[in-house]
Length: 86
Image 1 (cartoon, rainbow, N blue to C red):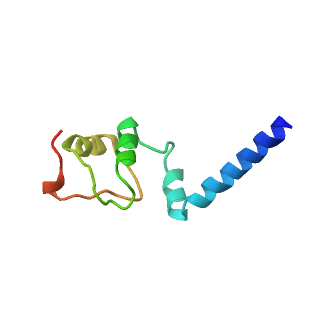
Image 2: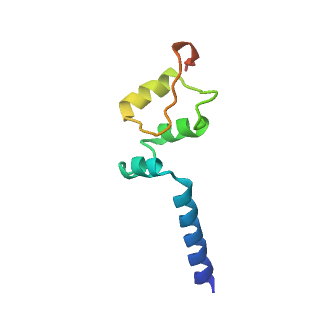
């Protein structure tokens, strides 16, 4: 009984994840062997929302993104005046 519940939960989770990603999301994800380039990339993505409203970008984030070759579908762009000091 437990294995049936576990299997059903896994199947539903897989369907949910597949439906949550657009074809563009899936394409970018398949081009890379991990979801994020690094822990810094993950932290940056989690503190900034997809639509880019109210971005929180530091000079260290910019340096890390260049050095670690971050990727993504939803780029966060800011003006020079919006960049926070570390």
